[in-house]
Image 1 (tube, rainbow, N blue to C red):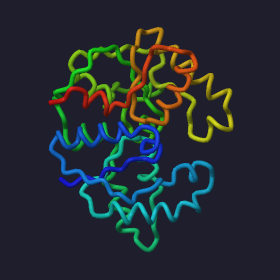
Image 2: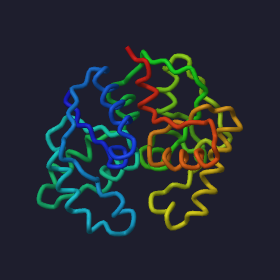
Image 3: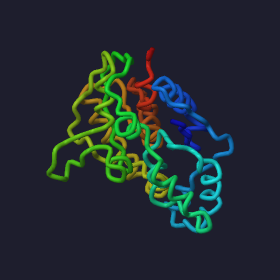
Image 4: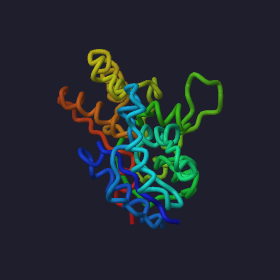
Length: 246
């Protein structure tokens, strides 16, 4: 299968190692991966701030660069959800619809499309999973605790395949970290308090690393950890799934 690699702008600018790990992992799992060089921001920051009418240029560019792939995969639940819900180009709606139906967040792609059952990865550390809101409630990557239903977690399913990795049990496993895009700018104090609460839950349960599907949330938590001079580190899930893989 031919996969278009969608790397959100904040990963490209601040965490390029996440994009590299995603590419490496997909290739080692047998995908033909292409990174369209002209891709830009998906438009989510404008849309989330109430200016979706300003995203038309982003939408057109996205269709230009991703219309010919069997699948599009991105290591970001929030950006993938934005494309799934909001990519529309009136004069090219057939192409936009194809993309909306074929774009996947990384964990979702590995479990639902590739149906990965085994990974040759090793990461001998205690790890806590941060379930980002967009991925959990928008993409359905894991069960929401407020619903009475059988629990599941696609990220957890994959991380359990990693040799030596010990998942820590959190008290409030699906609580928001407080990032929320522009929320962390306009409601800084509330955002920081929410982030501190999430970190405390991980630290109190012995996590050496915090992982997740959204670098934006991990970036928020990492900033707080650095200010606290904590030894706890953050890593995107792709980096762990690709660790020491043969």
